[in-house]
Structure formats: C-alpha cells, structure tokens
Image (cartoon, rainbow, N blue to C red; front, side):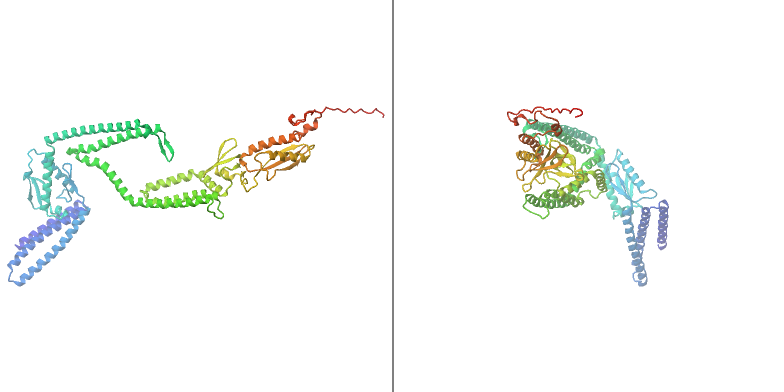
Length: 620
C-alpha cells in the first residue's frame, strides 16, 4: 500500500512538472503561468488529501503503539501545515488571476451566458470559449432537442456538461471554480441551468406562433404611431389657428424693457415657425422612442433596443448628473453675483448723491462721479468674472482654456485702437476739457458736444452736422471751450468783431456807435459793459474791435449776425460811412453811401468842383 501510494505521488508530480513545462513553453504570458501554478497547487492539494487519508487510516490501526502513533501524528501535522500554506498561496494565485486574466464570454445568441477565464489542454481561453459557443448552437439546431438530455458527469478533469450522454459541451475544472470561490460541481450546475434555460427560451421565441404574435404587435404599434402623429398634427394646427385668430391679443410684437424686438408681423412668423419646428421635433422623438419597442419584439434586434435607448438616456443621464453636480458651484456663483450686485448698487447710491451735490468730496468734481462709477463697475464685474470662472463647467478643460487664449489673442491684436480710444476717453474724463452741451472747437471742428462715450465724442455743428471724433484725436488736438466761463458767477464769454474806419471819423464817435450797437444786441450783457479796442493804425484806416460779454456761447452765430446788423444801424445813425477809405479819398461830390432813411429830408449831394490854376506868363 505504501509503495503504491508513493508511485501515485511520483506520477502526479511528474505529470504536474510536465504540464508546467508545456505551459511555459507555449506562452510567456503571466496569466498562463499563474494558471499553471494554480493547477499544480490544486493537484498537490488532492495528493495531500490522499496522503492524509492514508495516514489517518494507519493512525487508527496503530492504537496502543504510542511511538508509531506519535510519528504518524507528526507526519499528519506537517502535511496539514504544508496544506494550509499551499492553500494560502493558491488563493493568492487566484486573486492575481482575477485581476489580470481576461475572460471570454459565451454568447450563443444575444445575451452573454457566462465567461471562461482558464484554458484546457492545448487550447487557449478564446478558442475554448468559441468551441463551447459552437457546441451550444449545434444543440440548438437539433430538431429533436430535449432539455432533459442535458446532464452532468464527473471525470478526472472536473465536471462535464454533456448532451445525450455522448456530446461534451464543456468541462468545468477546479480552476474555473476557484475564479468564483465555488466547487466545480456547484459551478457546473449553474452553467447547466443557464445553458438549458437559454436553449429553451430561444427555441420558444423563434416558434411560428410567436412570430405571428410579433407581426401583429408590429402592425398594432405602427397603427398607433400613425394615429398619434395624426393627433399631434391636428393639435398643432389648432394651436396655430388660435394664435392667428387672435393676433391682437397674442401676436402684438415682442417688447423687452420697452425695447421693441420684433414687430407684430415678424413675431407672428417667428411663433408659427417655432411651432412647426416643435411639431417636427415631437414627431421625430415619438418615432425614435417607438423603435426600441419594435426592436424588442424580435430576438435578433433585441440588443438594438438598449443601444437606441442609450443614445438618448446616456446623454440625458450625463447632462442630468452634470446639472446635479453643478448645483454647489451654481449656488457659489449666485452668492458671488448677489454680493457684487448689491455692492454696485451701494456705490451707485453714493454716486447719485455726489452728482446731486448732497455729498462733497475735497478735490473730487461732481461730473467725475458717473465716469468713475462706470470704471468701478467695469472693474468689479471683471473681478466677479475672475471669481466665477473656476466654478463654470469645463473651465479646467484644455479646450476651454485654448478658446480663452485664442479669444484673448484676437482681442489684443484687433483692439489696439479701441483700447487707445478708451484710455484717451478715461484721460479726457479727468482732464474735464468740456461737458455735454458745451460749445467747443476741436481742431477744425466747431460745434456743441452731444455725446461723450468711452471711445468717441460726438459734436453737432451749427449746420446740424453730427461729427464723430475718436477720443485719441481729441486728446492729441487742442480743444477750445467757449462755454467754460458762462456760468452765473462768471463774466461770460467775450464775443468780438472788427470794423475798419477812415481817419476822418473821430474815434470817440466810433466808440460810441460800436458800444451802442453791442448794447442793442439781445444776448450781450449790459454788465460788464461792452468795450472797444483800437487794434491797429493802418495806412488808410483805423481798426476798431468791439467786445461784449455773453453767457450764450452756443448762440454765437446769431449774436454775431445781430451785432453786425446793429453796427450798421448805429454807424448810419451817427453819419459814419462803413466803406473803403480808398474810395472816400478819391471822390468829391458823389452821393453818400449812408441809406436815405438815415439822411435829412433836404439832403442834397454836394456838387463836383474843379479848380483851374492858370500858368503864369513866361518871363514873368
């Protein structure tokens, strides 16, 4: 008995070493090596169990012989210790196989029955899975198939699943069972039940009666779908009829914050087109959702059902998870926006008080309040966006960052002139060269300032021409402001014009006439009084400049026109001719150039006189 057991042990070890060498020669893959090692450990456990049985049998026979009993107990304990260590190593090998081994599914029809991870003999795992699938399909095609013909048999390699006692479908080995921490017979029972149920359900699903039922259900679904589409079209036509029948009530244009976005006609077109697009979308959605229902009726297309539903449910689920995951960030964004919104409102309150004059800040002019508020508002909003940016979905993705950099480059390259105008507008604001409504002269342009923005200044000339001047041009040009000193506490703007009169007119008379003309002009102030400056003494005439104060700088054209009229009237009343002194020095006896209404009734033009001088006689 001992020699027989020893020979059995040697044979098993030789077989294990041969199997291990063959496995290593066939493949260097770590998974196959672990499988071979696991086989060796399993075989060693079987061998140890046989030895333990033999030792236990001898131990019972050696009752009364203490020495032999003690020796047998020591041997039995050593085998048990080795067996315990080997079992631990086996479990470690199995865990490693579970992590690294690739399973191949058994899919005879549409669904996966189970997966195999271990190879048998010379076939690899993939070939084994393919062979099992082909055998199951062969049994399915048997016209005399009977579920009771599927059975299990014990063999030296494991548990066999057979059909009609002669066709082996697969062998469930100890390695297969160890992947699931089960006994091979227990795992074989589960596989047998799955194969049997699969074959029965597939044959039942492809029966003639089931095909007739499926065809009827398909026709019923198509009829119901057609009826539903018909009803959807009718509902949308009814809705459109209500809108078009009550245009004045529902389609009276689109206005947001008193700004008319769409006219009534365009709004009606927009609503009808949107309704038509919504109708088409609903129909497409219903047709798409009916396809999984149709495909689920046939085993061949049943897998398409899950695919079609995943095309909708997967993006929808992802979007929903994204929305749920974004809620904490959204709450943070709302809090940040709330804080900045009311901070800006508080600043605006103080700005309004400064503009109204309720609050006075030393060195800070009231007209700086609104521009300063716009700058602060811009900076606060920019800072708010910086704080919000990390909370935006996808802000950390490379695509989002690339787009941000691209937009920044475009902005920096294409907005150099705009930035120059913005900076110039900021400088102009705090230089305060003019205000809205002031009469100014910028370069060769004279007119009233109508608008001052961050980029441009708009000026309206006396001819009602609106001219747009970039702020950078305003900053680089000299600016003349005619309205600066026209306030109630100021003397006013000095308007002036020059008249040239000959030396034969007394300068006092001329001063009096020009001052009277200025006092008669409506928008020239009486206080301070107008004054005359004699600006030059030329060869033939004297230049007289009349100066008068006015607070109506925007009406200079009208003031000058009326002043010139009054100068003519006052000079005519004073008997002063406004004409070229050259002509006056050349004439004698002609009619005066003063209009007749200013002359006396008996006025007559002087006669033309010629004085003759006789030459003295020669020699005298």
